[in-house]
Image 1 (cartoon, each protein chain N blue to C red):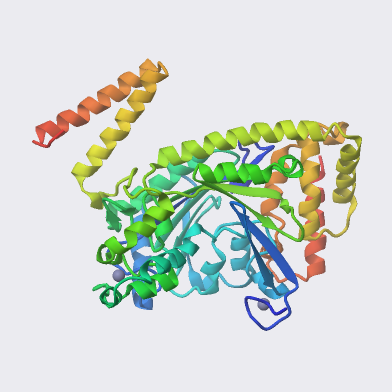
Image 2: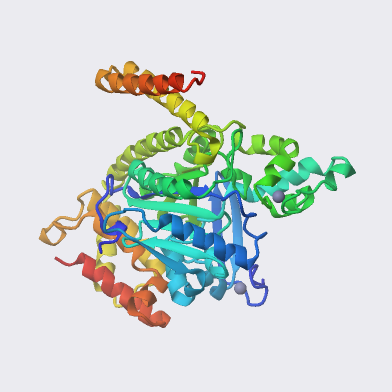
Length: 173
Length: 344
Ligand SMILES: [Zn+2]
Ligand SMILES: [Zn+2]
């Protein structure tokens, strides 16, 4: 059997990788194994479920109308076909351009489609404050539940300070 | 400077290391693969400028061009988990930011524009996240991240959308593996949105009985919650592994095996990578569970052998010696390093 990587030398190394019970076997030659770092414990670093994304998206979009396939991202000129082939977006704008087509597959991957957690500066000050408030409120609830009153008081104060600041700026709390 | 893996960590008998990775992209460049070389170089320059004034104490950052990461130097970075194999395949327009102790590495122009990675020894996801967030904030202060209020941080691959956070823990779980418990564990993990992977050599066992558990879902779950889920499940696995090890070492046959591993590790003149992983795993159980008695074992701790994992890779040995070594030379040097760790 020939090496699956270079297709030139005889495959002498066989590596099995199991992710959540699904096993894939790689057949590679000694040089490629060394080059890919397969001989050490860190192989698998790069593999993720996203490698299946293209396939998932492809199966969703293959039945869609021809007009859809002609839609291209105005920024990077990717279309749905190239995205499902590579499993990667061409640019951030692709997510806006193909949002409706992508959402079902994204939901398949994550089970949810509403971001929770950290917000960058570009999300806007108001959104960041709201997220900070939500996170503090959750911490407060947890502190009250575990009768950690010292932290609870601290979270309460932080919440009050942020809410006061927002009211002073005329924002909705 | 002492490397991150040389520092003691918590639960060292089962947890080798913890890792946090954040995937980020900038809004004013197309994603990797859609940029010109000029754009990639400019982006790398932007990231460098945003990090120039960050204060990380004496753990300062170095900026390495992708073109420098060739030969055993690049391979050694792959062996020690600092960069992905893809990253060194083509260094064009790429940059690696690496801290003195190697705990912080930032790949620029990998699959995403920016991949921040922080490693700690033992089970310590919280401080890894803290450091990663500090770097993230410094970049965010001067550059514009691609972000969407519904989808979170926008990543080249939709599997990283949301927080862009991948938290993982590397575990040494030989006793659970021998007891045949891993299939069931893997099933349980996947129901919790976690994933387990091991690298397999020939046969059915993972190399060195080392497994990595990470969160699979990044959208709709906060950083804190993702880490809490992972930490809780890992703590349970640690307890289960300890129980299984205690049961395992009651067998006279297994005790014999531990001493045999010790004998080879101590006296062999050449040790290949495969043999190293085979021997060190069972030997570690002996150290962790106090099976090896006698003065020469008194000061041996699991930490000392965990850090060997990051020192014995073929390319890492070449890097240490500063030249290409033959397979024989590598095996000899590996044996020497192991024997050094067994001394005192
Ligand atoms: Zn090959
Ligand atoms: Zn695009």
